[in-house]
Length: 207
Image 1 (cartoon, rainbow, N blue to C red):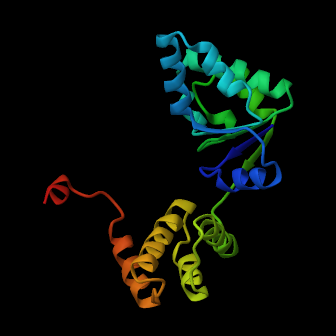
Image 2: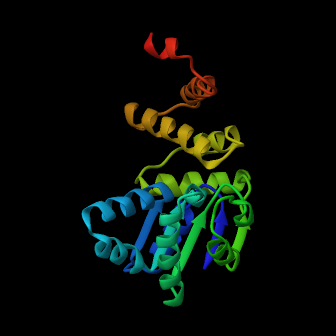
Image 3: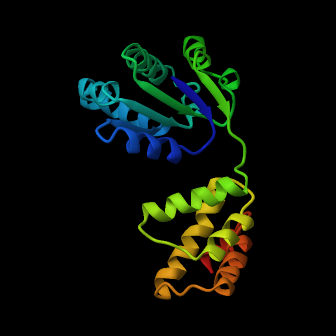
């Protein structure tokens, strides 16, 4: 059982599916888990809900801090966690803080989170950013010139979401240009991308 403190799960999922192609993998945010649980109570479909989550080989749950204060959902997740853990299944949880600092999470859940491997994953270095670009291009069946992927890796020192935003722009430009994307085109797109950071006034959106 592992607990990761980082907002991305893509690499873990890809690696598992490459190794175990028949594995039952469930990825859900804590919000989705909560909403599905509430819906199952209203529809009296708790059995189907529990069967879905408790038969996974790998359960990936993002933003686990969202469960704070939701006592009913925490109880349901506790029993799901226990059943998977006792069956020797893999559980990967992601949060924006250490399990001991999650706030209104019941102690019995926190103790189980702390019983796993807690890893604080920092921002990727340039080699990791380059590897992320390569993996995402492969997943889309596309390729970019080396100078383009290198520029993207060097231009996004932040997290993976910023990297993916610029990569999507590059791939879109590549498709529109028939695969003949130029570095100058991408630099222009990168400049426009960076200008959108920060709050955008409602009047600008309406205009």
